[in-house]
Image (cartoon, rainbow, N blue to C red; front, side, top):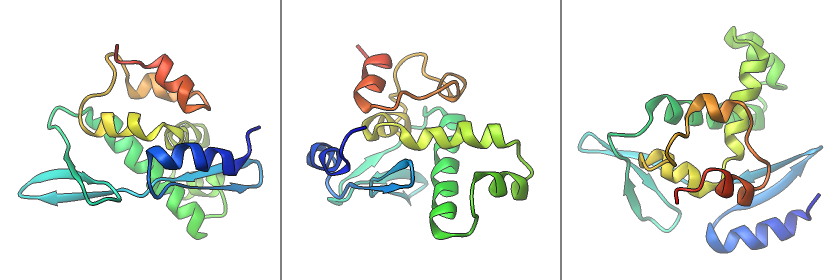
Length: 147
């Protein structure tokens, strides 16, 4: 397992504002970003204030699943739910489904940005991602390279 400060140092250069912390056996990576609507269009706002328009051609089921995963993660971190099992039970969902969706929170930030912009790698789908997301961002980029 890599040192958390090493991950934060390496990735913090590429993604300003990124923070990494360890919670038991899990490593939690927080990348500050916001979605904003303006004139009927949705934009991703980066920590430096730049706005990137989300294409109307975005894979909506995938975008919605990523948003759901981050919302659920926020609920767990805030203490609204004690764990994924309680969350699944309260939402009336299968806990295996919840676990698969939670896996989307480990996607590399540039892959998330590409998905939000409708520029995800060809063939990348929610079904494919729910089968498992490689732990390391470099592996994800190799597996789903756009070239």
